[in-house]
Length: 235
Image (cartoon, rainbow, N blue to C red; front, side, top):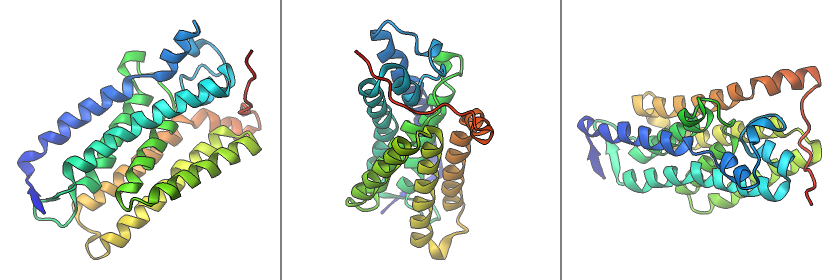
């Protein structure tokens, strides 16, 4: 393993800016634009997968979902390959364990608070799912089957209950806990290391951001007034 020195932290600063700008690119606005539709003025007004599915149907919702998944996942994968052979100076923490979620966090921030849309973006679920779907196989390649199987379970939950927001939040939370458990096992003898604490903090912040972005949905859920995620048929 090579040593990642403190003087190399500028890589994270550059990565944060680049990933934020990647997150700012909103596929829902672009795809809906091809249909001559302002997605922010229909349905819930949210430029994200759920509103695309409700407003334009499953086909467009699916395209938007997979675009956002790759938007969240590819920077995570890039972070893994860039830093997988490094450990932090005076630490046993592999840099890629921290960096992949650090990069993913800023994509999610860019998606939820894009400067290009006056800081009013989507709710970050698809991008967050993408971050986890790409990050987990970095642990073991076959984890991709676990991640995809779990994603399918979440989709079935949403289809059966029509509670899209709740299914999304459950999905993100469970994947976060699963990844945190893997890190606890890996660094069991060194959990007080600042970098591993920072990694856990990032996983927590990702959850806080997605739950915060859904705060209105949660209020409506508690009041029994939440919008149902029913696929709209398009001609």
